[in-house]
Image (tube, rainbow, N blue to C red; front, side):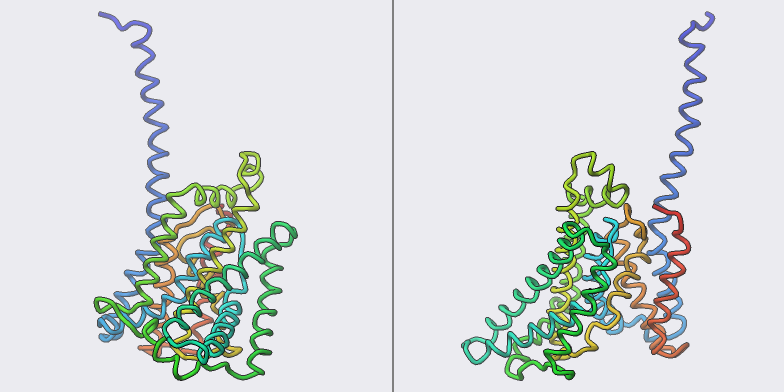
Length: 345
């Protein structure tokens, strides 16, 4: 029986559909491979580190690397939201320094009037996170309601935060009272199931950030704003509110990172948090987040933060180049990734 009109058209249409499906499949595969690049890079760098120094792969060294990554990694999770939304924050290092100094001053002031050092430390932790959220709120309002570019706002507060800390410390350092150091020490030096507390906190923040970005309406709005803010406004997205919440989230992450960092040295000085903004931004973009916003992932950001810490650790173990050039290496990485991302949105 000869094919009817419908049958004669079905084959070409099916062929066209298959032809269209193939490029789409290739694009999806390409996106998956692109998303796996940071992880592939981390694996390769770890293999190189083990070949260069046998101590690199030891449990103690791995825990040390992840513990030191926790501070920048937590900040980078918050920075991921801001950059995906098309913003930037250059002040996180100075913000952390001011929060650390203010927290120590608060703890020292409360210690003589409280019977429990643990309660004093708990109050300091809450105050530090609240202070970070408040600084983030100020950034968000200046950017949205004040219509000032994020670069300008955070460049200005970068200087303000560090100058205020220098004034509070009278150019020196603000030191935590000795009676509080023991009560505060477990926040950094404690461990659970053999894993340091900062790593657990980092993992919890990353998990919460990943869920917020990929599993909530807020996360979808952040990506939509970064892709095309005007279209997001036409789609009835509360753009200003989402931006403000993103900066509040970043400020809270800076507060969390700071409360973990304070017991490590027990003091805050004008050099505290120096270049943390560079490391946080580097972790985000190395993790695959587009510099122009619109796309990115918390998982990639975590991998990027670990990758940069592993590189620094390898440099320290092998002395391939001076440890004083670690920041230069991170700067080169930022430039290279930015070059590779040119034109991407």
